[in-house]
Amino acid sequence: EPEVTQTPSHQVTQMGQEVILRCVPISNHLYFYWYRQILGQKVEFLVSFYNNEISEKSEIFDDQFSVERPDGSNFTLKIRSTKLEDSAMYFCASSAPNTGELFFGEGSRLTVL
Amino acid sequence: GENVEQHPSTLSVQEGDSAVIKCTYSDSASNYFPWYKQELGKRPQLIIDIRSNVGEKKDQRIAVTLNKTAKHFSLHITETQPEDSAVYFCAASRLYSGGGADGLTFGKGTHLIIQP
Image (cartoon, rainbow over all chains, first blue to last red; front, side):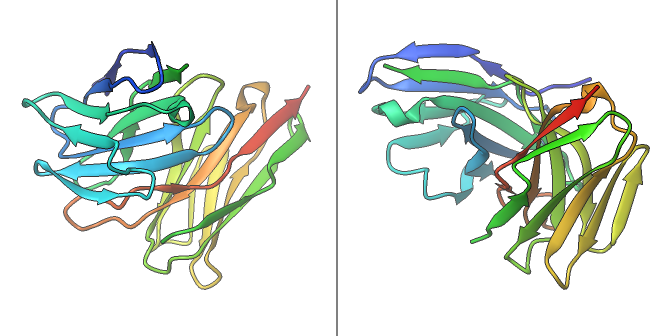
């Protein structure tokens, strides 16, 4: 069964450093998303991406964040200068054509020290 | 924007009993309401969803009901088993005809504990 894959599974970084989280969505999906989940809290929407551009973003997704689809398969989330409060699990997701059902990746745990 | 409230935050039931988790939403444009189960350290897994053109959907021991007028939807799990223990999240968004959707707004989650 096709899956959304994410790398790395866990990244530890120093405050102020740049981080790139990578995702490979399911191949026939057209809509891609990033969500985050701070430990013990709810899942929060960050950004959606379609046709090589951002279609929607939340208040959380400020100028420190950016997304890119550098080639035909990868979808990346970059945090320019990490803060302690960026520590969270980041989930990539893609949605099936015509159903909207989201398929989540296993997540990338980011720890900012 | 959309706001989703979820209750209760913790629910403890005896094995074999039923569990009900309730959510309300604020945006009348929302038309898609999925429920996710999340085990510790794992990704959210879709267990059932409902669209605004139906009032109820059932899949074996799991059912979801939707009241569009009142803007609330509920998850019902019957004959609960120990493996049902997890955190359950409701969510709401707007689906578009081309297959895209607004970002999901999640509730805060319900920690369901099944007592043996």
